[in-house]
Image 1 (tube, rainbow, N blue to C red):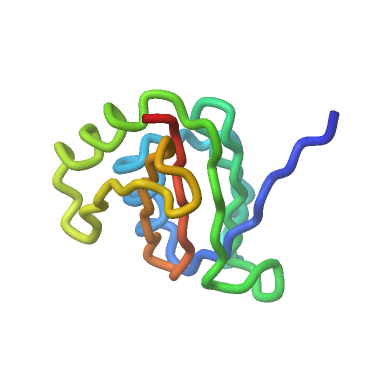
Image 2 (spheres, rainbow, N blue to C red):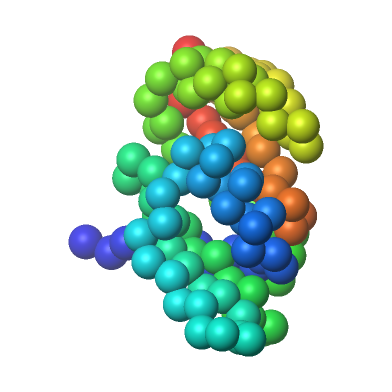
Length: 120
């Protein structure tokens, strides 16, 4: 079995923590942050694993990550809304390709997009 771990570009550690940990609910599994150097870290939530890198050349801003078969998407969406994160208030919509799928799209502070998809 292969495991895919997307690497997303980030530019600010505090903003990354505010968005991914405080708002979305990811946890930091490990980080590499020597003094006066760019950070690199792994985040996880449920079975989702993401890497964030501040290193030039590791990734380009503007990536999209599609999270398929996200369980309890309605409850997760409500949790995000209830936290009242001032920079992002995602909606929920039907997928254009399948009306039995719901989508919640969030945009991080570094122009990356995460699309959570789950059954109605």
